[in-house]
Length: 125
Image 1 (cartoon, rainbow, N blue to C red):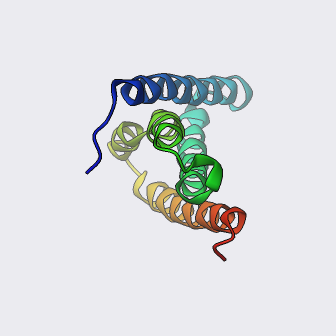
Image 2 (image 1 turned 135 degrees about the vertical axis):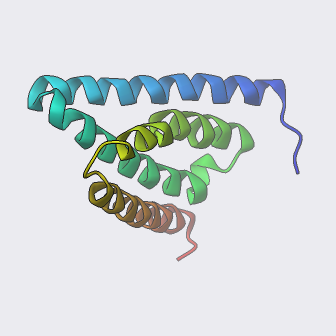
C-alpha cells in the first residue's frame, strides 16, 4: 500500500468539490428543463453512468497514470460526481428497483467502455 501525501488529500478534496458541484449543476439544469419529479431520477442515472464511464477512462488512460491525477480525477472528481447515497435514497421510493437495475447495468457498460477508451489510448488493446 502506498503512503498518501497531504497534497493527495488536498487533490481528493478539491476534485470531490468540483465533482459534487457538477452533479448539482446537472440536477439543477434538469429540474428547470424537465421538472423536479423526473429530474431526480434522470440526474441520478446520468451522473452515475457518466461517472462510471469517466472512472473507466481514468483507470487506464496514460494521462491519469500519476498518483496525484488518479487522486484528483478518479477518487475526487468521479467520487464527488457520482452518488451512492442518492441511489440509497432513491431505492427507498416505491417502484424504483427496476430503474436502479437499469442504472447499474448502464453504469457497468459505461465503465467497460471507459476502460476500453483508456486502454486504446494507452496502446493496451
